[in-house]
Length: 574
Image (cartoon, rainbow, N blue to C red; front, side, top):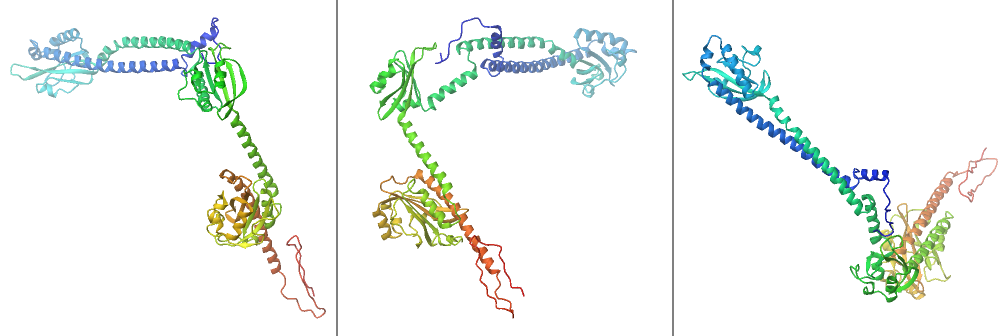
């Protein structure tokens, strides 16, 4: 019996249920239905093959028999006494017609025809055919050979034999043709087909009866479950054993382990193939083994198993008519606690990304956007943040080549007002061995878990990097600022010794922050470039010289509005 499934009622089955059960073995989705279809196909194929073989064999045998009978009758009649004299008589038909018809009827052939050496018939079953030319190839017979052939005749397609009639000088003076029509040959096979059809029908009846018996036995052994239900139950059983993240153990009433899924084996560190062994012999903690073998109800009881905290639930299996024993479920509360901690960390990171989307890019100023990036990330992700932009970016231009381009420190922010980093406005270039240079050349973030061992980073400025390490900075994540295919600079996230160093799984958060900030910085850069171009264009449109006027002296100076380019104009009108 399957755990949790109630036994079927013993009451008499209702007619409609019996009808459904009868029809179930006709359903191709059921095992019985598939067996029935297979048997039906096999019987039909065998019947068709037997029919074809019968027809071919009977046709072959009947054709050979017809050929032999035709040859025998033709040669016997051709060599019969008085045949030559009858051919030379004044009226051969009067002498030969009765004899030919008598032979035809006694031999069962369809025709016995006598002709002269020109092929003109003297006899024929149909009198209106007498005197006409024989239908068929008679040349070999005219040369003294008995021939057989299958072809069209006056009575239809027939098997005929033609034998020569010799006189005393062994000269062909006439021919005898004897044969039987193909229609009569086929009739021999038709008389045997009913026996074959009866055998096929009997086989179908036996197959149906056998299928019904198989279906009944299968339903009894599977307790009324059809294949779909059994497949679904097996899939659920397999999912429990291999997929769920909760341990399941079934213990029989004799204290032996009946079933243990993969998760239970992992949580309890069970030996290989533990099924069938006593619970006390599995090497479990004594208090855990006692709960599993006690047979008592347990709800969310927390037990220590090695370095794990397991929440155990135990229930008896014979409450709903199942077999005696108990089933226990195990949950690792240690991992759940760790999962809740990771969920909290993920929530904080999402909150940081949301705040970054709101607080970064509030203005179209490049330096202010860099400062906003540094302020958002400090304390919640890093202890210090520095932003270095390529020198042309601050002017609104695009850096042609990142490697070797001078960088300007655009923002510095941290948990303390004092810091050991370059101040804002400092212009410098990264050495090729520094992690910032690697990140800019490859376009990927670089992690330095321990700056005291990062010789490439220390080569940037040994005196300054020594101050950074002495200050207590421990680790670094540097991420290139890339937007719309342009590398604008680099952002550096620093952590002190009091915090855990950066790990690879934190790089994705740093990339998200840098990606959003890079787009905002690029927007500000584009605005600065377009604003500068507009102001330059506006100034270029101003007059370079004043018109000469005799009535007054004119001087001018133009200053654009603070908000940008306006629609202002002026002129001197005479």
